[in-house]
View (cartoon, rainbow, N blue to C red):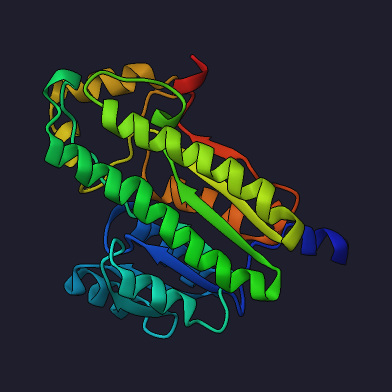
Length: 251
C-alpha cells in the first residue's frame, strides 16, 4: 500500500479538537468514545454531570467534560472562547411523539427550541471559531425523519427538515472559507431516548419491518459515520445528508 493510499484512508484525528453536544448518553456518548479512540481531544457536553464523569473515567486523557445547557447563552460564549475547534458534532436533541392535533404549545416550543434554535446557535458559535483558521467540519444531527413523514411525529419531522435546510445553507456559505457542513440522518437507534418506544413489541416489529436490513440501529453505527464526515477522508463532501437508516427511506 502506498503512502498516499494510507493517508487517503486515515481516519485518525490526532491533534484535532472535537466538541460533541448531548454526549452523556446514546449517540453522543458513542461518538465521544469513538473520537477519543481515534486520537482526538474531545470536549463532551451534557447537562448531567454524572453521565459525563463516567464517560471521562473511561477515557481519562482524551475527554474534557463541560456541564452546560446547549440552549443557554453561556454555552455559546464558552465555545467562542476556544482557541481552536476542528469538529462539531451538533447532536443534542429531543422528541415528544404526539398526534398532530394534540400537540400542546409547551411541547412544540420545547422541541423547536432544542432541535432548531439551539442547533443553529451552537453551529453559529462553532463556525465563528473555525473561520478563524478557515478549516473545520460541522456535523448536524438530523434524522431519517428529515427526509420523510411519520405519524405522531409532526413536530420532530418539522425540526429535522429544518436541520436539513440549515445544513445545506451553511455548507454553501461556509465552503469558500474551508468549513465543511454535513448532516447525519439515522433511523431508530437503540438509545435511552428510544428505549420506551422500542420496548413496545408492536412498535419494534413495525420499525424492523420498515428497515430493509431488518434490524434496529446501534449508536456505534452513527459514530462510525460521524468519524467519516469529520476526517479528511471526506474532504470533498459538504452539504450532504448521510442516511444511516438500513434502507428505510429507499424502500
